[in-house]
Amino acid sequence: MTCSYCGRQEEGHIACSRGHYLCNTCHGRDILTLIEDHCRTTTLKDPMEIAELLMGHPNLPMLGCEHAYITTGALLAALRNSPYGKSDNDDIDEAFLRTGKQAHGGYCGLTGVCGITPAVGAVFSVFLGSRCGSDREQNITMEAATRVSRAITGRTGPSCCKAYVRAAIR
Image 1: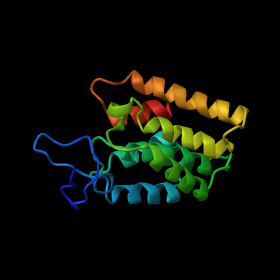
Image 2: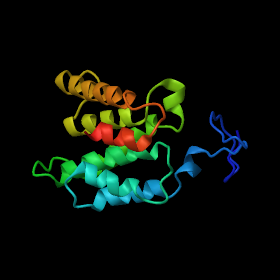
Image 3: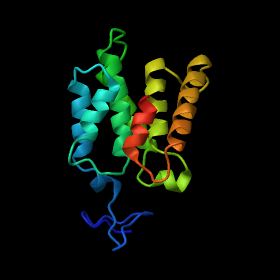
């Protein structure tokens, strides 16, 4: 498919009824920077409050993996600002990097995995120091991702990324 904005040609799966296609880069252009910047600087301690503020931004697409980044950033920023203070901006950056490897537009319908699920997995993995082969940390991380996937599944039909963010954070 050819991106209607930048002209990049790539394999794609979702276009509007008029045939317009947006690559992942153009789909959320500028909003990811805003999400990342806000999560690095917010002093809020409630992840739902952070997420709601970001989801209210007028440039946020109604549907899309930008919501996975909101979930990632809101959870880790709240942990950074909590009395536990174990998280920092390097953790947020690492979790955003990991989220970007698995959260791709339209894959919820194509693979059955909403990008918010691996985003929460990235948060737990970074926060707990989970690695392949770790025992307890990997188990907790996988259980968190499983629970989030179940919570999101209960909110399908029609899809609503904002409802998925709320379910994941709860």
